[in-house]
Amino acid sequence: MLDLLAGSDVVSAYRSATGDRGFVERHILFDHVLPLVKNADNEVDRAIALTIRLLDAYEQTAGYLEVGIRGLLWGLTHRGGRATRGELVADPRLAKRFTAASKYLVRQAERLRTDLALIAEVPQVLDALNRERLDQLLLDALAGAIGPESLVTSVLDRHQRVQKQKKKGVWIEDDGRYLTLLPGFGDSSEKPPTFDGSFLHPFRVVNAYSFLRDLGRVRFQEASDAEET
Image 1 (cartoon, rainbow, N blue to C red):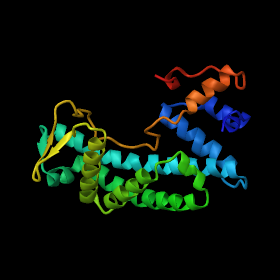
Image 2 (tube, rainbow, N blue to C red; image 1 turned 60 degrees about the vertical axis):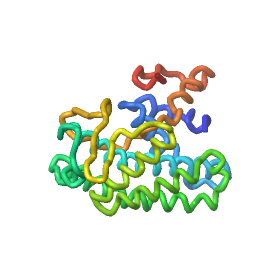
Image 3 (cartoon, rainbow, N blue to C red; image 1 turned 180 degrees about the horizontal axis):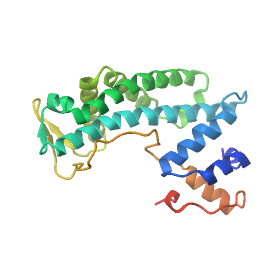
């Protein structure tokens, strides 16, 4: 992987990339490294290719689910912290976001399903992946892809499950009729959240280039906004 990142074309792409870390890392891995290995016939490159495909499918799917939960936080903030699901789904400021996210999930869920099926051909990727977590994400995406109402239900169920796994409290309390925003989790932004396709989580591309620079394999100055914080 370090050899792939150190290739002159990939380094050039990294050097000229602008934007936040999530955008830069997706741009390098998906747009520049994946094409180098996607048709490879050796075991290592095939594992790298599938890993990149899976992580991108995961990030894109999770991103549109994130639009759902963040949209609820935004909607509740702008409704005084309490509303029914129906009121939020009917809010014209949120309806467009929820409808679009649900439609995108149809495509992303199918893509994730296709990539998960390829694990049988490259089983060693399971050494670095949590298959149960990926399977659950697929189920959440399929549930949320039915429509805006199902998206709200899916992201709330997912949020409650994830917070319980983390042994943390939920951000939104659901009493069966009303959703109530808990203190400290509001979103007072002017517009509801969107998703631009950038990775939500770091995948160490920035760290890898710092390492390669220290080794003298690449020569350039890191952009300040891409440094590890």
